Image: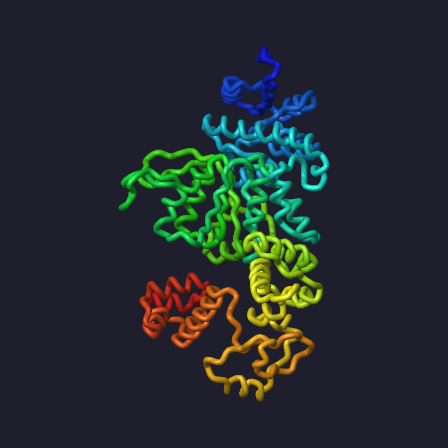
Length: 526
């Protein structure tokens, strides 16, 4: 273990191995020595603490169960003292639960006994590399360290800047991202549609030591069910009709980086079990292959659904939920951080200007005023849609926000301020010909508005839905609920009434989350 003669080379990494079994301890020590590391070994918690008191290490590898305590105690001590060492925990006791507990406690990664030596070398190399990068970047970028967390790389700071806003809620999200990015623990990003969950996932990737590796984003709800396995795990030539050559899946494409699973709640149950095994074993079996392939990816997932409720309803596997939800990042909806609207609007307008190559009209305080009162159920996506429309409709130097709100059907700011439509107004509206179109106020050909309570623009009788799919789902759900109630929730009779097969009605009931009383199911079965 003598130092290399060429002093320009960095000193070999120093690793502490903690295991009470002499044979295994020797095996790990020899494996690491062959990789060129300096290694010290300890057989108990007390010996490990003594080693840590004497010197610092690049990484600590510890067994979960030791004669005088738990490896988690050592991990918590490292975190409490804010030591730089990255800790890898080896577990064979209660496997999944202990692994999740270790990651939540701050472990960089975990290994399951019996340890695969190839995987062992990969995990240790990743821990050492990340530890050294953290120290170098921390010294180089000290002014940012206190603000965003120790060792956030430059690309990570840029990714965090894309989360636009200075509100307390968004700052809490940024700080959590910078903190949890440094480990390998799976992260679940939760928030409503349009809040920017993918931006958070990209920031997590950029702030991690995997930031220079690939980020593969997958929309789990957009892949046909019969193609899921081949898309995720790859396929061998001839494994299915049309497979003319071997192809990689998402796991292989994300090797050394991050695999982002968007809308993970839409993944079918059958695929959930296969994904769980891939995450647990860190290996996959391509379609048509008999051999498993090791993979090195960090999992970040996102959903707008309440997965805990889906677990209780049997729509999502509990074991997969606990694997994915080791660390949770909740993205606040836009209505809870309205103070960010000016900065967010300006950032979106700047992007619209870059993409269109045109000068964007000025966003005045008068144009901003109605935005503060909107419910903004579609969050940032809805706001961007409004600004695109306002830019297209603007003719002067200021943004024509009133016309954009009119055409978006967002004229009324909230239900509390919305006036009731009088019967006379309703009759007058119904008397209009079916092809009559509402025109903007400037056209001089507008129908007389209903009385308002200070709103600048009237409400459209039938505004176009912002989310067409959600609107259609709600209409279909309403029809199915009515048909089921009319037929005492007998699915066979309901399917016949609507001209559907029993399989089709079952699929729609499950997709739309329609509750079916237990007694009706048992009655139907009989």
